[in-house]
Length: 617
Image (cartoon, rainbow, N blue to C red):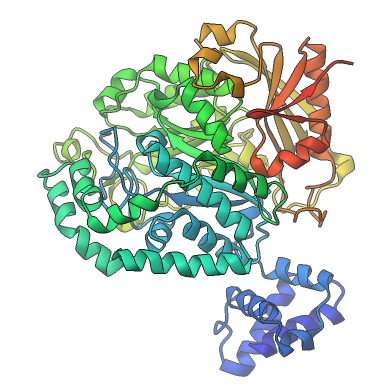
């Protein structure tokens, strides 16, 4: 391994135009010489070795005499899966522990080893099981993996998955988020490594396993009973977890001893930590959205809500045992927008009772009707997994998976009508093909859909398709555009920095709420348990998101990406101008904990659950 590193470094020192092809050439040369094979090594083996030598401060590390610039170039060249941080942040998904679900959706998997709707073979779920569903261990594990892959982890977006967030006990929810912040704060520190070791011993002492064979054996009887219809998912989970002495002993300490003050302490520490939380996302259902819930989410530091709506057809929702009404969905959209949250929607094609034509019309309504218009969408095709209740209509011939042609036609039509201010984050779930009984198994579904549209000369305005990612751009080529659209409660301004070719380098979402919107939707200080914490009023505009795309640049370092070049500040100043001209007195921002210092430097002051900047001239 030493030879490889030294060969690479020698190549970097002697060749001015060193690039990815040179890395491949050096590795092939070494492998032929040492192993007689060009595939004995893969790129991902190199960086962990490099980091091990650096962290150990070994003589070998010193012998390489690597300066900071050379090290950064080497990491960039050897980075594994560079797309992971190409949108500007390191995303870390964590899974809450298995828990009874208040829903009974037909299409949801009933894997008793997981929270409702998730499967043990999904990558994030496998990581959760290995880490006892512990938030601290999951974050530490994922950050370590990203670091070893060569990704910067200075800016972290935490995504909390597990069905309906409010189904869990409040004490658990507070503890879970506090531990997320603690893990980010302590990552890379001696205290963090010690905490990981101690935490693992604690779960082991309680008698909780984390290896797949043991977990499969423990859950086998309950899973078989659920699959046979002898037990419900909730009954099985209560039996396996809530009635388990081992899990009960854990449950007693999975709550904050010092209450909310401990969470606030970790949040304050994160404001100037080496690794900062720049986004916190939770998952829920429309019927669980209330003003009080949204206030509590802000106290946790939440900035985005993932909400499963699946369809805008009430009859179809009822057929799928999704007991949500359109009025609940509309109300959830209105409240989340007024509270400043970024709205991330789950939408499913091919539900029981749907047709391709209805799915296309349903999605068009989602992205065009002022009552809805999300900021981000997960657009999933419904698939049948063995434990799902969808198996009954499938066996009876009442539901079938769309053909490849039908599915591609639906998704292509959806992408084609997606406006430039909506981002389709995903088109498939990370469900293993071995778990899929019927439905899509193409892992490159998005690529196939986009290629079909491009072959048909159809332009794609959707955000993710336009992100600059790793493309080199000239700042002088950027133009600031303002796209305006109306929602049921606001005038929305989507400010975007775009290149002459239409690539997206940065954006800001500005909401100008209607003067009567809060009263119209019953959102008052009295509708929450602590209105004094709220501190925004009818004459306040709201910045719901500021995002500069491109490969994540390290905090306080400009690097070669478009981050940290003033694009975000320019967006903020333009948003303030628009709000001032529209007659608003102040502007709020729904800042993440790790971005508070940045917004203070932009003239915002802490104001309860938000940060505020006066707009008086």
